[in-house]
Length: 282
Image 1 (tube, rainbow, N blue to C red):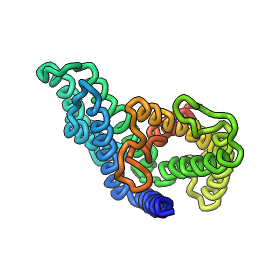
Image 2 (cartoon, rainbow, N blue to C red):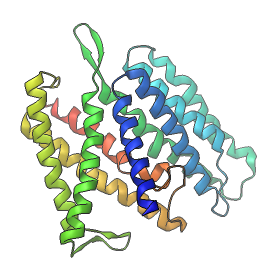
Image 3 (tube, one colour):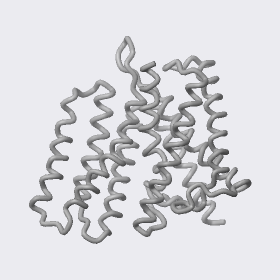
Image 4 (tube, one colour):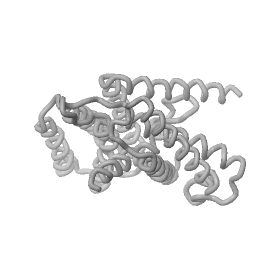
């Protein structure tokens, strides 16, 4: 019971912080820069426990946070494209430094170093692609799309848990995550599709559907987030199972680490960006 209360309180603060941060672009930038840094730091700490792996935690973390701020500044038309040059120099340094580090297995170090950027820093930085929009009057900050991705993920998790608990019989991926079922995943998808239809109605009613998405396009976005969010969860489960750990960390009482809380979003955010840009092609 005590653990449930702790988990509930942490969950409330977690959701509230994310919802509130999207109200203001500066708040979003600060919060997710912190999330990016903590997640990269947590990831490098886990992989460095493996034999022969020695990634540079500090530089990987700084690089990830810098990429996030650089993307935010660029998408918000605050900084020019040259803002990415220091980041590229850092990546080159991380590659060249292995020539002099005399590591046992430099390939492992290179692989895990690049993974911190591709798996964690890049997806979080793409939130700015969802949040900023070019308009005739300049670049505008639109909170709706990034918040919707997280709302879909939360609804999917809740719906999948409830439906899986009640009707779950057939395992979705027993080798990696024995607790997930096809029934739970289908139930989560149904909840998200219903929520996406509701969001379409509300955005049309209040005139904030800035991309002009139809109800079917909103439903499509919801399903993309469900599918890739589920894969993101499974990817992190495979990561932890390979390392032999139950939780990625303990920074969030009752919820584990940063990777445990943001695993679904690491694939859902890039997938949402690809989906929305694909819509503009047709």
